[in-house]
Image (cartoon, rainbow, N blue to C red; front, side):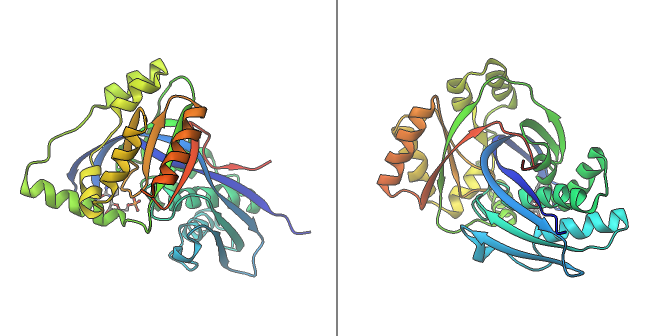
Length: 301
Ligand code: C5P
């Protein structure tokens, strides 16, 4: 009998991203507030032919590696080595999260692979250990497992749950092509070296808006230190941000390292209207709606 495990893992938006100095290991010290939103990658895992293999489908699939560079493949190998079991699985990955879009699509796939292989192989790895393995795979992978809304420190991998109220309605403007995360951080370092970049926003404002469940307050508090660097590399995103603001979004921010732009609105009806209006303006490749917070990587019923 062939068993298949299907795991769904969500995208993330950084509601706040405060970027500190570049560390000796090349990573930047972060204070970030993540929210998991209802845009998903789906990973089906079944017994393999003695190795780890993957087939990638969906939007942008051609830009996703299908070899050992794929984060799901790396996650499976890491889990197998940790548990002392053969690395034997075939994945079918269905992309719903924009590729290289600043929404942790690759991290979602790594988190999904950890959950899927743990179930498929019956390895019963404790949650805390899965989170440690996740951190080895990438800074955002622990959050992709965790989901909800959380404060991330260190490189983003140390998580503390953020308690808050309500569901938030998002409209996401997806761009043509992706942005490489290292190149956005490098551009930020360069801009900082030249001078003239000022600290922006405060995590406390985002926290208090979340505690109050106040979308309008959250909208004005959204901030991302990587945004100026993403805008320098992709100047056309300014027009996308402006368009959403003019159309009544209560908040507008580049998601993570971009180039996806996230707009916050107050109601589901406003999200439908904003998505339609943005799509009609030609300021992005395509538009998606999402809500958050949602749970992290989970086996689908
Ligand atoms: O951890 P992850 O593999 O997602 O990071 C990708 C790249 O993003 C790193 O190689 C680094 O260039 C940059 N990064 C960083 N500081 C962080 C997280 C990521 O400089 N806190």
